[in-house]
Image (tube, rainbow, N blue to C red; front, side, top):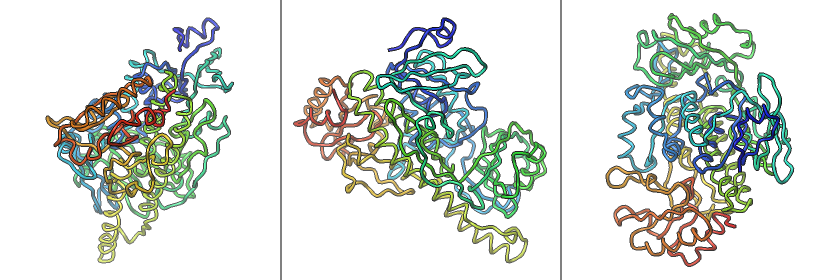
Amino acid sequence: MADSLTLEQAQAEGRELQVDVLVAGAGPCGLMLANELGLRNVPCLLVDPKATTAFNPQANATQARTMEHFRRIGIARQVRALGLPGDHPTDIAYFTRFARHELARLRLPTAAQATEQIKTMTGSWSAAELPHRVSQKFVEAVLREHAELRTGQRIRFGWRLQSFEDTGDEVVAQVVPVVGGNAVTVRARYLVGADGARSGVRNALGIDMGGATGLQRQFMGGKMFAIYLRAPAFYERFPHDIAWMYVSVNHERRVFMASVDGQGEFAFHAAVHPHETPEDWTHEDARRIFAEASGMDIDIEILSTGVWIAGHSLVAERYQHGRVFIAGDAAHLFTPTGGLGYNTAVGDAVNLGWKLAAVLKGQATPALLDTYEQERRPIGLRNTAYAREFADSVGLFEVTPALEADDAIGAQLRVQASEVLGAHVRREFNIPGVTFGERVDASPIVFGDPALAPEDQANAYLPSTQPGGRLPHRWLAGGLSLYDRLGFEWTVLAPLHAVAEAGRMAEAGHAAGLDVTVVTLAADEADGLLDDGLLLVRPDQLIAWRGTDAADAAAVWARVARCR
């Protein structure tokens, strides 16, 4: 239910606004949630105190699983066209300083190559999409565009959630414009706090964060100084093969820098020493630090600067309280090694989106919403632990001045550094297990068994039809992704010989008020995937159940969908 009133009209007329879901925070998590709800015709209102989507680059890597979700909602091709040019290398490379000794490099396909190579990849990297090196600022703009189309209303930037009360039957919130003016009372069935690391929603609920923080390392531990800069001359003066990410490893200043547009814009992040106060640094200080890390005397234009803290590995003790949920950075804080924070946030939105819609449409009992925390909090703990491992791997590597010496000792130390960093870069950036291996085996709405789950490994992924994990991907005739044949909601996947049983399973789902698609595969397509018969695939592409017949169809649906 939603009023036809806009937020501005309600303010002008002194009236209340009603909406099914109120979302605080229009970062990737909130915007993805708005897309998920909009595609299901669930009225929502999304407010954010910022003036618009992100200006600064922030996260710079979209993992393959996130790209699969973008494909599912129809925006993957648009996202892949943004960021680096199609032929720009996406390598990660390590140097003593950018213009001096190269220490290690992981070569990866360009965006154009990824589109073709993915169709022939097997094993751990059998997927509908490969990762894409694109700044969050570009992704947010695309998510906003489609969220507004799908919800039929503008994202309300310049408005903030002031307060809220969960009455038990609804959430009564006060939303106010940042520039001043009267508050608007918004009555929502549910509230989602996707409002970032300093989440006002989380703090109002009194939810604590658990885990580790304040970890000190030579790199990726403590204060970091961020510079968003433009330096077109970099490519002309850079003496090595160009990359996507450049990492400077020396005793004076540890740095990583990511290409934003492949034409001269970069996101530059420098470790800050304990005695330094980066809050007081000027643009001249920024230029000095860039010169330290790069070993290059080139002009740079400073677009923005900021300070942030590395060394977090924090997860909220709860993800839900009554009719209020938290998601994204409000629920978990990462050190950004592995690029897992933004990608985990998108996963939160996907999980919560289909469940909210099912409950609001009367297809499921409110008990379905309890499984959001049950499924996503263990994944938050898992992913923050992986990010911490990656940060330790690179950040605890000690560097002395001798690494840069032009003598035999320096040469030997660089050989040793190459071995360490070469192993690290593959540990952090070749992570199909982290990307595809999220599982919910212990969830009450899947027929899972944690004892049968594949081993969870960062750098290897074993596709499995054991319920609780992502449906194994494969390419079908004509270059069609199996995922492109799945329904947007529930799918019964079956071999041709079991089409009758698949139909009965789907009929039971329809009888429960669910949207169920039947997909049958020919023998050569089903081989190795449907050997056990039927698979029941959730809206988020996780397997909920597998079996040989539909004899217990009603009971299966009652469990996996929490049908009314």
